[in-house]
Image (cartoon, rainbow, N blue to C red):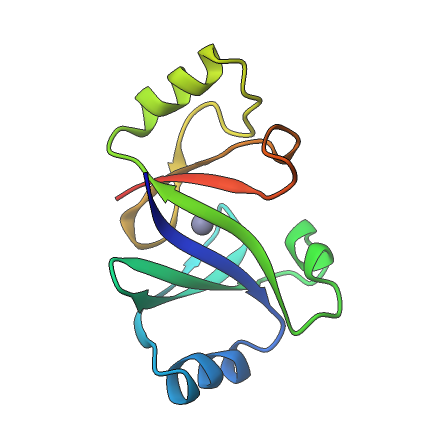
Length: 130
Ligand code: ZN
């Protein structure tokens, strides 16, 4: 599997975007609201992968509480799979605890599913099919 994206939850989207685009030189390739996750997402091109900046829509949501007072905080890593249903079945059969047994809608036309962080040593892992 390759990395599809690294997702970073932010407090001030414009300030972080300036850092990533103007200072670091990344290019913005998509921006949308993902209601399923309660975030505004900006995708930055990083080779064949993306960096996704996530701005919580609701400051009392779990993702905002996870970020807390930090300016930015790594939220999850996403790995690209060709067939997300097949991968989920394979992991479930192997006894891996899942948050999503069925894919849901992600950013930029993707289908995504999260594994349970208790099954992954603490880092939240997402599977992503483009
Ligand atoms: Zn993601």
